Image 1 (cartoon, rainbow, N blue to C red):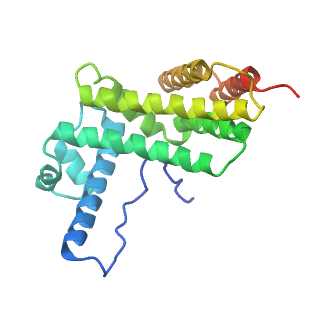
Image 2 (image 1 turned 90 degrees about the vertical axis):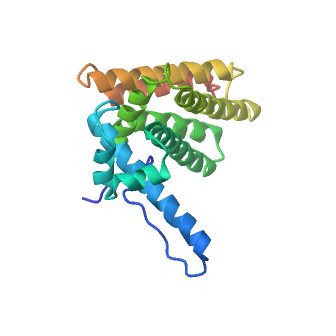
Length: 223
């Protein structure tokens, strides 16, 4: 079966050959490729072993590079992990934004937003594991706290924007969009966490569908 395309990282990192690049530009391209190669390996290793149980050598072996090359591009372990976290969140947000840009109907946008949020736990389970691992560090690492705070704030703002657009077009009720966005984010994160801990506790797809209906019932104007 073909491998499912990841929204967090490409299955493999590719460098496109461009003979028009000068030496400096080519060097930047190679550096970008190497960094993404290393962060991809770190993502896989942390998903498998957890935040506390891996070494830089684990990542070097997975990436197929020397540990010295990792230290060349990342000054220390924390710098590499912060880069990983930032890249993870940017990739997931970019995927969502591309999907939303293809739609003009706020109702369809809301459906995409809700579906992509719930689909992460099934299609990108490694992303959920790694994010939860990073959440344990926010008390001790201000940089990670800021990145995760920006992620959640961005999701709330994206959903709030969809709701405002729907209200302006007469599709959604005059609801408190920030409240709805916060409530949905809380339900989503809670369901994901419970499902990861015990996937026999409830039928995830059924509950996701019921939450989606609940959100639409709250905001949609009945015709």
